[in-house]
Length: 234
Image (cartoon, rainbow, N blue to C red):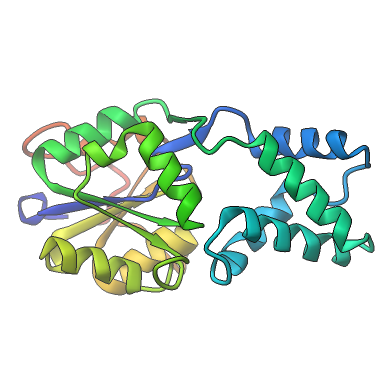
């Protein structure tokens, strides 16, 4: 990667910059307990279907209700039970109760000191905006695109293209940082951006420009002349 050509850095939100104070699994278990029913489906099934429902509903509450109803039905339970669990989940989940992953705020600040910066995140607009506001991320970035609400979710290229247009930056002069090969790396690669993968295993179909074990290890933005890591393709 020719760092002297980079003008903009975009970041994924969930799992890259931010995490919930309580894990989604903990919140779902508490929701089942509040409803007085045995678990119907694991939290992993909810997140596997999240982007599908995010394309249909702008509200996080409605998205979750319809997703939980569908999952309940697929497991042979009453869809209304799923909606009840979704309501309890909403009561338990406070979107403002988020925190930066270790090292993430430092990396974001370092990037924003040198480059134009933005967030590209999949999800419901209300929930994602609440997280961004609670963490003060608006102070570090020029723009935010909530894919799924404003345009098709990543890996579709529209969200990346919107950000690049707003920043006035050519794709070849931008890099995207994210934790998911199938959405972050694939989407960035498709539009012609460089991609930095955080934490996850790389995919042969979505190979990143460079990879780091955690956002805390992503030190390339912390000097005026960032150095390539050993994992970077040359």
